[in-house]
Length: 203
Image (cartoon, rainbow, N blue to C red; front, side, top):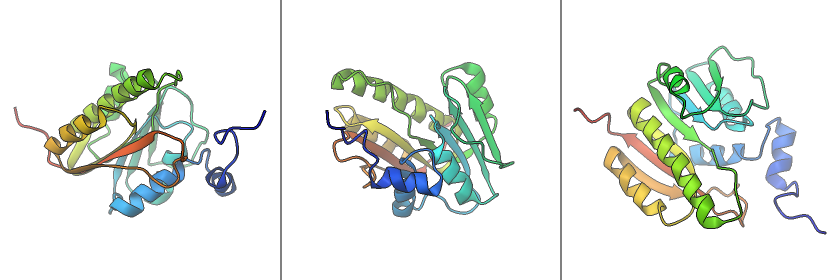
């Protein structure tokens, strides 16, 4: 049986291994930053669904010892960077104690999420699970972002993408979908990019 493209080490996977990153996904974030110029000055960043750690490692290198990075995942990270400006909690992002630990280290300039649900092969089910994660990440963003901050979230493309972008445009100056070149051609993932957080709504 021939290998699927997901099993073959493509250009991006080989590049990641050569450059010391746990996964090829790092180049998606790199491309997003190059296009949207998210990292400016001394940033405080929250990485939700961080394992195996490529995005976190890239962020820490990008920060170059300045700013701060918080990260969370159910799984351990595939790297142990020797950075003092880094906090990682292994746990459920929905757990109150995890949420508190992350929020108290804010406010953040950027909230990132490359998280994806365990897939079932049923596209409708998988889209629904992805959308639930996206909604949770948006909630984190609205609670923890500083005014002017940015949000980057992976989502499985489907019917809810348009509505989620409409929702984001209520709280951000701009929101759009973007699919980096490093995404596999057959993948139905894309990213929601929201910039210019308007700030928390006063009650």
